[in-house]
Image (cartoon, rainbow, N blue to C red; front, top):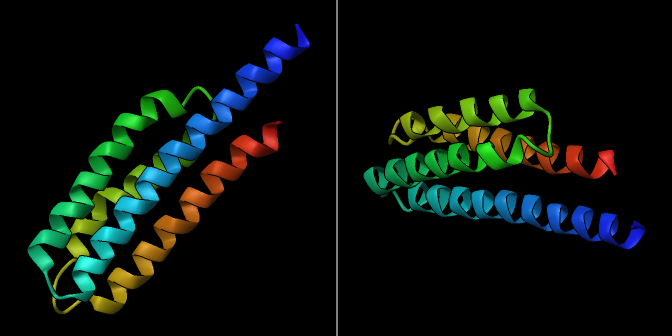
Length: 113
C-alpha cells in the first residue's frame, strides 16, 4: 500500500513538474522573440503559453492551491499585451513575475509532500 502511494505521489510530482516546465519553456521562447524585436510572434507565443497553462490548470488544480493557479493564469493572460516595442522593461518585469509564480506553483506541490 505504501509503495502504491509513493508511486502516485511521485507520478503526480512529475506531472506537475512537466506542466510547469512546459510553461516555463514557452515563456522563455516568447521572451526571446520579444528581445529579437519580433513582437507579433512574441505576443502570439505568450498567448499560446497562456492558453496551454489554462488547459493544464484543469489537471493541476488536483495538486496545487487554486489561488496560485488563478494568479499565474491572470499574469499569463496579460503578457501578450506587453509584447510591444515601447514596453521592454514592463515585459521583462511581468515575465519575471510569471516565472516566479510558476516556481511558487511547483513548490506548493512539493511542500504538501
